[in-house]
Amino acid sequence: MVSLVLDSDCLIKLAKSTVLIKLLKHFQCFISKEVYEETVVKGKARLYEDAFLIDELVVKGKLRVKEVKENERALKLLAKGIGRGEASTLILFFNLGADAILTDDKAFIRRILIRNEIPFITSSRVIIRLVRLGIIGKKEGIEALNRLKPYITREDYLTAIKVIKEWR
Image (cartoon, rainbow, N blue to C red; front, side, top):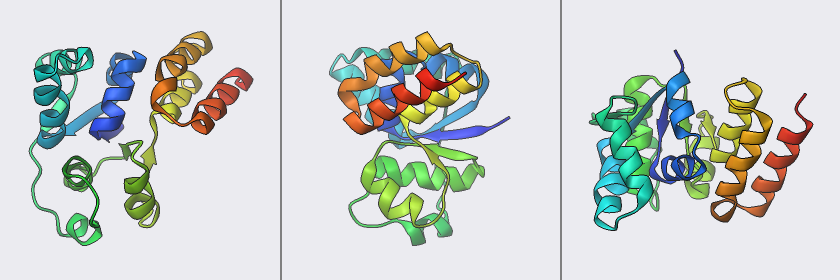
């Protein structure tokens, strides 16, 4: 089964878009303990609705939280200006030998992932893939993107809408 590691930003966006549960049914998804702290512990303290959903998914075992173990390859790639959540996501990606990282963090994508040819998927692209795989329908994909619209770039939103509308 395909394994994916999510950072905080993408995890929250997928929860807000309501496709996170469907993603978890079809893929093995992992987050680091640091990402859990950022999204659930801090989020619940601020009463963020998505934090309660994410915690419920962790408790039910649908989303797995993993402790990261130091990884030489990841440590060599990490740049200044990358947050703890992204750093732990990269390390966990290597620890697990995962298939891809799910992130929308532009600096993380540009400085680390693209430069080092590490596979990644943005939240809008996750929705596109779920439509293409038949996990969600076109209508549900467009609705998910509309919920995501305030949190992603206009370009990403318009591109994703176009791709989904043109999908057979």
